[in-house]
Length: 104
Image (cartoon, rainbow, N blue to C red; front, top):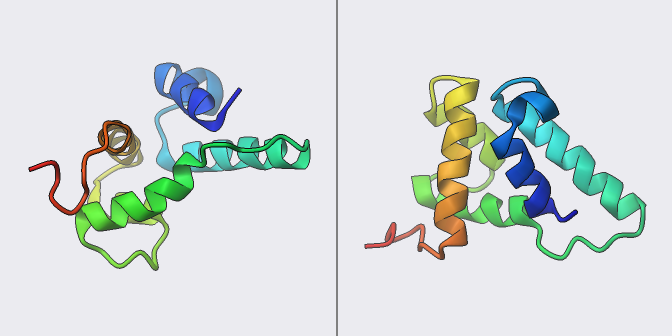
């Protein structure tokens, strides 16, 4: 299963994978999953969360010295809101929306 596939499974059923909609739990889970793939010798073809490290700071016009998850936790009120915002931005990234112009 690819990184994107596990991310989509968490989106569909967060309670099964991470207990509830929490960005912090999501980041830890996916990070552990990807590390497990690498340790097992599986090539991670599409590193989504590395791509989001460029996309999210650019979207919010914040220096990317901060991890994308920290940025979302700063701009969103709750863990759940940050979780939802991640998936909204992921969809935009996957559609090829330019974070500088915001698709305009």
